[in-house]
Image (cartoon, rainbow over all chains, first blue to last red; front, side):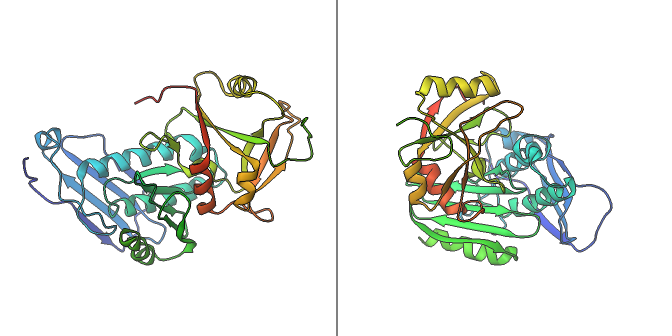
Amino acid sequence: MSTVACCPSAVYQPEIQPDMPRISSGDYGKSLTMHCYSLDGLRVYLDVQQNEAQLVHNAMLPSSKYIGVNEMNVKHVISISDKLQQIRETGLFHDCAGSSATKNDVICRALAVSSQIPSGFDVFPTGRNSVQFEYEEKSRKYIELEIFSDKFALLYMSDEKTIKYENDNIINLNEAIKKANEFYEL
Amino acid sequence: MSFNISCVYDDERIFHSVKTGVPSLWKPETGRPSTGLLKNPKGCSVDRDGDRENPEIIDSFIQRFGQNNVLALIWLIVLECRQEGARVVPEPIIDPSPNPYHALLLGAGKKQLESGKLKVLTNAAKIIMLNVIAN
């Protein structure tokens, strides 16, 4: 397996820019740029420079199973950002009540969180102005992190019927991530 | 037992459709939908079986949404829902397209069901596949 030339970096700068959130991940081979502004005014900027041949050969950065660890699989990040783009433009999310500003905030927050989500997670819209990251094992061990414009909700289950943790009103992302990582100790 | 428009019995079945559109709410690796499908602040829309057999129920969804637009139907027995604390409240639609079988799946009071209960129900749901998943 070939190695990756440079590492992705996530830079958080407390400045607010007037332009609308934008996501650009179409240039699959050369680079991935995600650039948007979250609800709390933090500028979220993620720029992944990649060599096309390395992507074709499925080169990956070492990814951690833990949420919040800043190592990531480039293809995974591209896949998540593409799907968030779809969610923003179409589907159930588009149909549900709520202002477009609220929906943009949700997408921005989800993009910010996506850089901390390990590969294996997928993202889905809901009908209540939120999106959710989900990861499920064959044993039905399951975790779900739902992103709202003003809060987070976390659920994890040890099997198809047993709820181990559920909280639908977590304000702080770090608190949600800390609690989410207890899922891996089940 | 014949269909009673205002009273939902334990042994009735309720149905919800999964659409083929993008972004998909279907999870091919588990063969089930995301719980995002059922999350709605007004409650989750379902159709009661109304003493109908599956072909008639399937046909009613296809008539409403189109042959190519329904990926699958998921269904649950009302008792399974009630065991998770859910309520099935009849809410027949009169206009513009009458649907006497329409109901809402809700939590306690008028609240929507909690995420955990929705996941338990999604895991318990039976699936009728109607279309192939597009890549």
